[in-house]
Length: 368
Ligand code: HEM
Image (cartoon, rainbow, N blue to C red; front, side, top):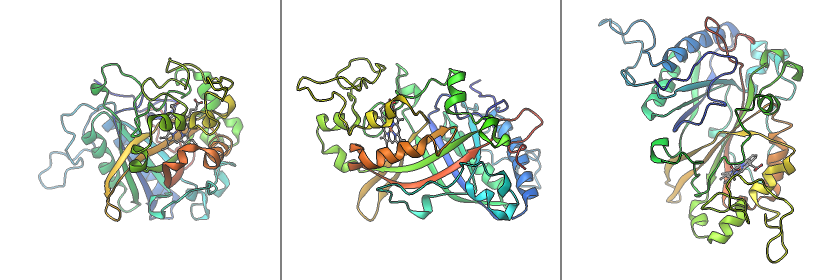
């Protein structure tokens, strides 16, 4: 029935195959009591499990004298591979909750990167929820009901909707294309390789914070594309920007999308086939550093100040250690990437995504 199991060793929505739609919400806590936060996670867990299996949430859905506990717009719909993934921002570990001793050693705010143009309204948050589903109404319903349950304890800080081509629209189930027209996700590590996932994605107790064992760390960056500029650049320029062919997704000079990046390959004029400033080449980090990307395209309509489209990539990556994986990679890209001509980072947040729980438990139980 297109349901993804909510309970388990890991939270769903991380190595789950990317669904068609995303609704992301960051929250600010309005309480300073850790027991309120614990209660919030207990109710969020119960409701998230109900929604993931396609049920209405709560008990009061037929009482004429009460507002229904579920807002109702997903009634009768399949759960549409709904996943709900919870995380906590660095600000949860400041002194007000008495949790500062539990802050994982390398879970600190990102440094500022060259070219960042971050707008405070698109940054940070005490808590975050990433909802993904193959149906937009199902995804929106989940965020709406979780925000409603949080009233009195947490308020919305910012939200972002995301999309990719629907799986129905692609008969070949190929790698989805981003709004620059290129296949995006080809170079991702294999999520079915559990040894690799333990190296790249899942935090281990030996990393220092025992409560994060089997959790992971998320980086979210709202990256606006200068679409109008991109659309005026030549195909050759576009392909040299990524170091890949637009049509096939193959590395420049190769024909197979999944051909390994050959950093030594030369083109007919003796120059590197993969330009030194190309995005794939730089992000590859010589094969030494990996992250798991799970990004969505976004559009927030048009920018009324300029008359241009406000659209781009809502970049999400999961990694075992943000300082060791994402930070050096983004430093490299910020300094050298040809793609910087066409993008600008406008939002940024990081979250520690809790380990999964079994039935009867609640998300965050190892921390609170
Ligand atoms: C590869 C697009 C930002 C990390 C790629 C590829 C595309 C792409 C088309 C080649 C296909 C693939 O392997 O998936 C974009 C766009 C971005 C963006 C449009 C911004 C709007 C970032 C950022 C990071 C990043 C911020 C991390 C700091 C990577 C990595 C690869 C990659 C690790 C794979 C490299 C490899 O083959 O080993 N990206 N990307 N990207 N990108 Fe990005």
